[in-house]
Structure formats: structure tokens, C-alpha cells
Image (cartoon, rainbow, N blue to C red; front, top):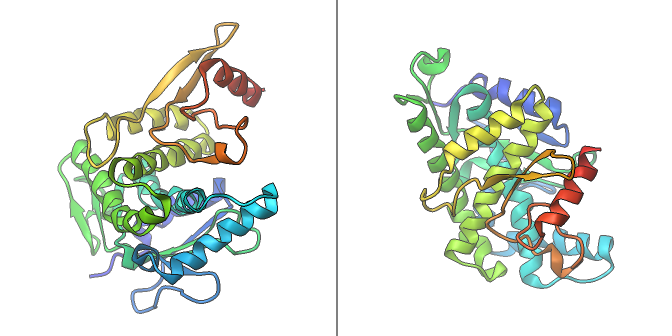
Length: 283
């Protein structure tokens, strides 16, 4: 039986309250996923055909518009995957983080539109196939619920749900990115960690620290197909400040456009530069 929207609605409402650049809807069971206008289904991206060409044309145009130059084909594809995977991971990790419910979204159950005015991240239409929850959850009796015994089992559900959705998408993007296997899953690992870590900061009230702890338990290392651990660590500022950072498992390739402008968690950014950037951001 279909999962009722109420099982996940509170989590998605809270997400869009603090992060209004992303819109999430749950289409009715008898409604088709949107495919018109700027919408593209995850299944179409996974096929790696003309729909993926159209999707990546947006990234190519954005690079030329914002940076006045063309990017390599593999760089454009890397940008495109990041812009899809970052928000789609939130479909799974935010209900887990806020409600202790883990939905499953096969690629046939998600559609994405990043061309909506006033939505910088875009819009997701997603219909869960099932969801996992803990014993005692009031949602355990809802259609589509699967009760798992404990928190570690629920974390395993998160890892499985994300891999189930992303694996075919990575297969579609991989040849365009000139990456395979470990390199692709390194990028996927970063999207899981950095998307939730960012949103948790917006939630306030120490939620970013809680997210860091939860992500370290979710990805302790040796959890294939993911690469490495959540990889958080602490740096120390000039006055003894504690500055949290992490080491990305992959590179987004932005350095190919702006070699001097890398992100604070980039493998190419040394600790001294990280400290400077983190202090600037904090101020």
C-alpha cells in the first residue's frame, strides 16, 4: 500500500522552512511524476541519454554565463551530479535526522526541476515506496512502514536507501564525468555528509553538532559502497578557537575554473587557508 504523505510531511516542512530554496512535494499515488518544462525524472538521468544531455546543458550554460569560459565536459557533468545528488540525499537524511524515519525512493519515484524561479536549488517531486522506523514510532502502523529493531539498523537503512537511489544515477553520469567506482562513490559520500551538515546548521539549537555525531555513526568507514568516513576533524584558530571541518573524499573540480578559489573542505585546501576561511565565515 502507498506511504501516506503524512509519514514524512513534518520533516519536509521543517526543511523548507529553514531552506526555502528547495521545494519538496509528494505526488499522489495515482499521479504521474512531472516531466514537463524543466522537470526530469531520476530514471531518465540514470539512462544517460538525451535527457541527461539536456540536464547538463544547463550547467554548461551556467558556467559560461557566470565565469565567462567553457568548462571541460567532465567538469560540467561533475557539477550536474552535485546539483542533483546534494538535494536528493536530503529526501532521505532529513526524515531520518528529524523523525527517525527512512524512506526509500527508487529512481522511478523522483523527479527534479532546477529551473523554477525563486528556487535556487530547485523542486523535487518524490513518492516514497516504503519507509523504515523504530519500534514505538506512531507511524509504525501506517501503510508502507517497516519496523527495524534499533538505531544501527536504521542507519543501515539510510545507507541502503541512498545507495539504491544513487547507484543507477551514478551509472548514468559516470561516463560523462570520466569517473568510475570509488571516485563516484567518494563524491556520493560527500553529498550525503555535506548536505545534512549544512541543513542542520540552519536548524539551529546545536543541531549541527548533533548532525556531525549522527553522520560519524552513519559513515564510520568501511561501509561500502561509500568511501571512507564522515571525516570530520577540528582545527585550532590563532586564539585557541575550535574550528570544525572535514576532509572531502572527492574533488568537485571547481579548481579547473578558479584555481585559487577552492572550498574549505577541498583536499586541495591546506589547513592554514581553512582556518582563515572558517574565521572569516564565523565573523
